Image (cartoon, rainbow, N blue to C red):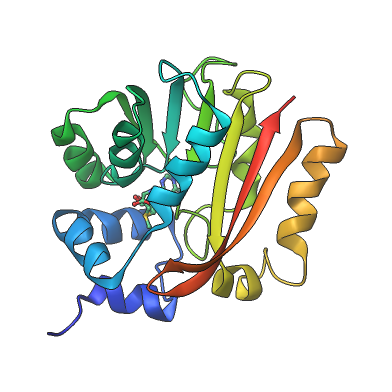
Length: 214
Ligand SMILES: C[S@@+](CC[C@H](N)C(=O)[O-])C[C@H]1O[C@@H](n2cnc3c(N)ncnc32)[C@H](O)[C@@H]1O
């Protein structure tokens, strides 16, 4: 069976380099994203949700699924008992599939970067950013904006595939960890955990990090 153009782009880490381009890429992929990812193997959303459940035991917790796409992370969070989940993504078409799941309270269509999101400070008990850091996607400049909307003590779970961490200009040569660490030094969050994930996506490795907002 031939793979979709988007799956081939993922294998090659060959993504559009503009926000308009990445929005169009995911808009065009939205209707087959869930099926395509399941066929290739994508356990990262389940792992992110499991880590969240370890750090947040209150199932009434309010959780932000940042770059939620078609809603795979929220699907896993609800399986673990969470019910108050909001999402943000740039892809309007992906958000339609998230909405159809009927599990999000609020879905916001927005770019995620250094722009101020239409969300109050300290709104969430926890935040997940799964599968969204990399070439053409989000970079770490968005982190202060994510930290801003999470309550003190709340966990932030984020992940990145090894290939991207080692090759993307703004991540490679230790810059990824240095940027995370810089926010520790600024007193914005503390490191809570790290896991090397051998089969993060498509049986290729990745890294999962957990921080707690100060
Ligand atoms: C690989 S998908 C991951 C979606 C979901 N978190 C998951 O694990 O299935 C990456 C998502 O990031 C979104 N995205 C990429 N760049 C973005 C940006 N600058 N602002 C907002 N969303 C962005 C895409 O629209 C897409 O839904």
